[in-house]
Structures are given as C-alpha cells and as structure tokens.
Image (tube, rainbow, N blue to C red):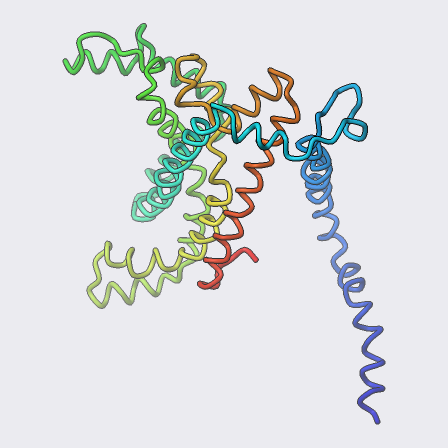
Amino acid sequence: MPQPELQSENRPYRRRGPVIRFMKQWDIQLMAIPALLFIVVFSYIPMYGLLMAFQDYSLFKGVLDSPWAGFKHFEMFFAAPEFWNVMRNTLIISMLKLCIGFPAPILLALMLNEVGRKTFKRLVQTISYLPHFLSWVIVSGFVLSILSTDNGSLNILLQKLNLIDEPINFMSEPSYFWSIQVATNVWKEIGFSSIVYLAAIAGINPHLYEAASIDGASRIRQIAAITIPSIMPVVIVFSILAIGNFLNAGFEDILLLAGNPVLREVSDVIDTYVYRIGIQNSRYSYATAAGLFKAVISVVLLAGANYLARRSGNSLW
C-alpha cells in the first residue's frame, strides 16, 4: 500500500516544518525575542504576586511563608464603605471615555481625509499629535494653569464675555471634574489615536470613490457607503480592546488632576484606590485583591466583546 508509506514519510517532515521555517526566518524571529522577553518579565512573572490577594501578606515573611487567608480580602473589599463610590466613579468615567474618547479619533480621521490641501492637513495632524508625547505632569500643569482662579485663561475669557462675575474654582468643584478629566484625555490622545484610522482610510481603493462620484453620490454619501464600511474591521478590533480596558478609568491623569481632597468623592477609581490603600497604607493583600477583581472583570469583558465580534469575522481570536 503506497499511501501509508507516503504518510509515514511525511510525518518527520511535518515535525521538522516549524524548525525549518524558523531557520529560514531566523532574522525576523530574532526581532520578536525582545518583545517576548518584555512580556514575560513584566507581564507574566509579576503574576506570581497575585497570591498575596489570598494571604495575609507580610513583607518579612514573603509570599511563600505568609499565612493563607482565602477570600477574606475580597470580602473586605466588597463590604468596604468606599466600594460602591469607587465602582460608580470607575464606571462613569470609563463610560464617558468610551462614548466620547473612542469615536473622537474616528471623526477626526474622517474629517482630515476630506481636507484637500495637504499643507493644512499636515499642520492639523502635527498639532493634534503633539499632546500625546507630553507627560501627564506637563498636561496636568497646563490644565491647572488654564483653569486657575488666579489669571486662568478660561476665567478671564468668561469674565470678558460677561458670562461670570467672579472666577470659578473649577478644580475644587466636584461637578466639573468628570468633564475636565474626559476632555483632557480626548485632547491628549485624539490625534495619535487617529493615525490607525487614517492608515486604514488610505488603503481604500480610490476607484470606489470614482465610481460613486460618477453615480452622483455626495461626499457624505461616500463616507457613509464606502469609507466607514471599509474601516469597520479596524474599528471593531479597537472597540474590542477598548471594552477590555473598560475599567481602566485612569491613574496618572486622575492622580495629578484630582490633587484636591475635595474631589476624592468623584475622582477615586479602582486604580487610585489600590494605590492609596496598597502603597500609602501598606495594605498589600487588600489592594492586590481589589486589583485582581478588576483584572478578572476586564478579562470577562474582553472575552465577551471578542465573542460578539466573532460573528462579524473580525475578532481577535
């Protein structure tokens, strides 16, 4: 029977297939090694510390010798008086960022694509990209300076327009914080986030626009019928990632903008709560439990969003 012999001869070749492909692409494979090492060192090895969430961790005893506590710290976190306030702030800020911050770069990319003058288009792109490369220390100082009651640009403008009589202390009023925080995030990241969508738009076949123009389609109609459907796979992939990071309401931005203790009621999210309880108060096990709770919910959201997107054929896995 020649067929079994042929299969037996192919089996060793199949086993050597990945090795042969690796040897042929050794230079490309070597480029991936630093990224893999980075992920292993900074993402997987630290997961060993998650055991602290189930222990009464002691710095002197370490992870191996600290006594086991089970779900004690999770129960304490759920029963804490700050739990619902922290969850409310996290969900509201995250929802505002998702509803406003996610479509903002898509709209910017669509508008920039309609600009005919390349010089003006490049100028707008450069100006919108720059804030991304500024640290949150600089951005927060810039925002605090604009909103200051002492020669703050916004208060001066509102007084010149006779909209207010006295300067408003925006950074001491809890009712303004969510708007300021979300607007600052959008301003900082909108330009850089639009790069991917501009690249996706640039890959659209120009003959589609020519055919639509011949058929009498307006620019708005072309955007709705050609541009948006063409970039929808990219939008879906980034929406999955955004939903997976839904509980990442912010850390550096909130920590720097909400320096006033009066704002803690509306600014305290899971990340800042973990930092304050874990680092400042040295309650490592409790803070690890809170962080692990957030991580588990994020994984569930990511898996759920990917499952729903799989029906469109654009899922991550």
